[in-house]
Image (cartoon, rainbow over all chains, first blue to last red; front, side):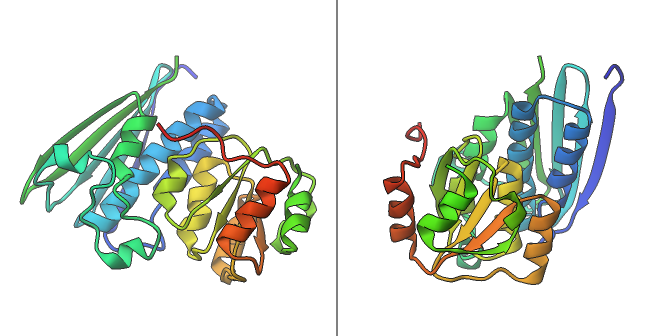
Length: 141
Length: 117
């Protein structure tokens, strides 16, 4: 693999049944490209947690995944509502998800901690009323 | 341990993937919270859960989990079964409750991996 590949997906908010389709597609693509299975798993988990967060918390948005020979960069950009306190949101166990989301198996306050755990680099930019952009990188080499 | 050994220990029944019962299982995780499952990385794991929605299959897919056991006799719907078949994930249903199901597999030598750090 010498060239870079960019994958783009739209994410609908509140469509919980379809949540994870983008992550699933990225995982399949990376497997077909013969990327190391451990790297593939780390990308899949980080992206899936991010995608689930977009479905649960945002008004929808888009995911861009850029695959190069050296790294996989994931950019998740939503249309709001934005995170009031990103430091607090990063704390394991902290969640603003409603009870109905917990009954679906998410909202345990582990999403962002898991994204940090499995990616090599995580950056969150958020403005209340505007939106949130999450950038994650997993290095291949 | 193989998937067949898991099935036998839990007196579970196959929902799909019986033809894959010879596949090896190296560790297990029991939870209804999928983010807890996603914090657990182990190769060739079996997931025990009482949760029954498509995100259980997706979580298993992301984690390369080879087998899902639905405890308390829970049964996935057709969409979930189709998703599992496409991803070659074996689905089992057991009448045991979560605690007993985990205990039975632990007794057979299956472990949960290192403590969370």
